[in-house]
Image 1: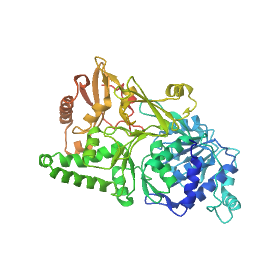
Image 2: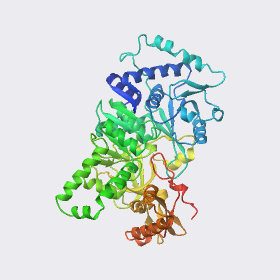
Image 3: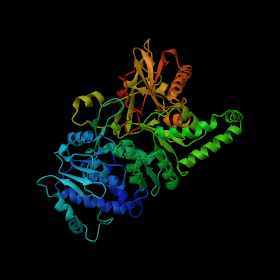
Image 4: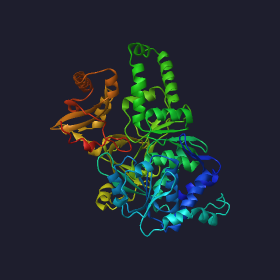
Length: 554
């Protein structure tokens, strides 16, 4: 099958949805699709006049915003390669990524630019403000500022009277060309530049068009980081290609801000990570159903259905009350939470992906998915489980197909380790599949711990139980001298509210250890819980960077 052209997805959406609202900063500026087309056209003229070539790297860093999205679309539709950088990265990391990626232009949010040093990025020809697209810095012997100042006249020469549906026409760019160079630290290693062809983006969007419920004019809230493929693909590129109205939460989105935005915007679909769902469950739902009276009532047929229906209604209202489904991805969903959501009939589904696949690997609609699975393999990929029996024996999940990256930028060794000679991408995730190609993830290959008699221990399973214990916010299980140690970051808000002393907190953690061990096989039991003083460092997908804590001082 000949893949549909990614650039045409953008161009066709601009033409077909010309007068519809396209991009909005939450409680800020708004752009129609026609406005976006005009801004993209101006940037294309700017790139051409500055002799930026197809395939050149252009870096982009800033919080989610309409201008971030416009820059991304302009760069990629011009035929250049976008290098999105997470705004939370340390300035030294930003300098390194700009240099390593061979970027020649940088678009930066003003609050980020203040902490950067242009002398540490000597190959940049220019740095643009993401706030208003003005030039912050230009290299020596460059004439970019004079070109920028003359841009209104250049635009009028190309589009007398302004750009129209009839005059909008992007140059053809093959899906085989590199579209994105995405740097991600990942859960178990250091940052690598993932080289994604336009075909990977097109394959993700094509699948979404056929399988996910959105229509032109629908509202979408974007709060996941756009510099990560999960948020970029499914809160931005796919909705934009349809003609949706995308609302960007431009400041750091706390749960309170997210809930407020959902209530006001009432999105048609919700894309989120487990952390948000689990926090709502633990803070709002669990205390309500964990009382003696409620437990008694839930033991009566019909009464329990009425209570669950009321909980489902309230939870639905938290997300705006207008969504068709909530898609959860980016990390493993707590099993207890998943079972509860299923019990109350909540419209949710769990997907699976990774940056190296741009990102989608598996997904199924909420009413077709299977409990405990991460959805069904997408039809643009093949899957193979590295075990003797993929249906019963756990092995590494490997995929091959249109979604898969070309490799890691300037890193042949890492590429050869990730993609074998037959083209299979080794995901590093462990799991099984069933006869219908539903994937069941059992853990990370590199986080696997061998028990005293060679048993496979998946720390994520123990952590899921720990994270539901009192006064535990999150945890990491590691191995020390053949013993399992749980590093625990406590729920400090609850500790402070209830004025729990340090001595009492340690006693409670001992009780948690004893209680969780009751539900674990002997070889999986925890020998010690150690309180960790701060929140664990995470990847953009909100997965804990496990490798940072394997050598923790105990």
